[in-house]
Image 1: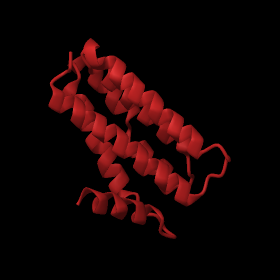
Image 2: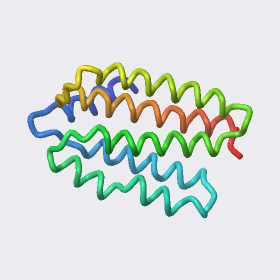
Image 3: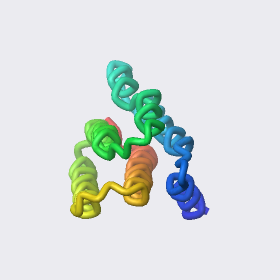
Length: 142
C-alpha cells in the first residue's frame, strides 16, 4: 500500500503539468512533526525554513530547484539529529550521510529533468519521513 502511495506521488510529479499538492502536503507533515518534536524555541525557525508557501511558489514556477528542496531536507535531517538522544545520533548521522551520497550519485550527470527531480523529491521525502517515524517510535528524543 505504501509503495502504491509513493508511486502515485511520483506519477503526479511526472505529468506534463506536475501536480505538487502531495509534495506540499508531505512537507507540511514534515514541518508539523518537527514542530511537535522540538522545543518551543525552535518552532519559528522550523516554520520559517520549511516554508510551505515559498516551496509552493518555487515548485509552481516550473523551476526544478533541487538545491532549494535539498536545503529544506538537509535542515530537517539536521534538526532530527539535534533532537535525537546521543546514543542514536551516530546512526542518524550515518543514515544521513548515506542518503546524501545516494543523492549526489543520482545528480552527477548534471541533468535536471522532471523525472530526476521527481525521483529525488520522492526519495528525499521518503527518507525524512522514515527518519521522523523511526525517531518518534524509538522514543529516543532529548
